[in-house]
Image (cartoon, rainbow, N blue to C red; front, side):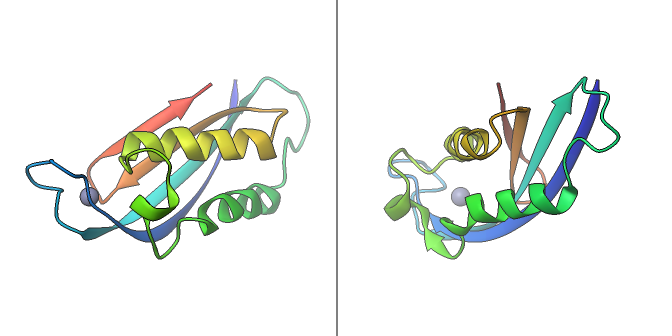
Length: 113
Ligand SMILES: [Zn+2]
């Protein structure tokens, strides 16, 4: 299995109503990795530049936004991973994708399908 990955990041604010720590409005730098897994034998499965553009497009909707206003579900890292996977899967339908979203330096959520 061959794996390819690009990484980008965005800044956003959120709050989680009722949460003991995260109920107050605050911000994070979210790092996002999108990984393609393939058993294709092609010399180049996808251009990294193209993959980077797709990731940037998916993140642009959330960059410097209040996530509570732009997400339909609660803006948790889990839901960001799900929604970014869905968007990237629509943009890159040929590939098996894994999307990992880092909330700060030491925690992440990952979704793959
Ligand atoms: Zn938070």
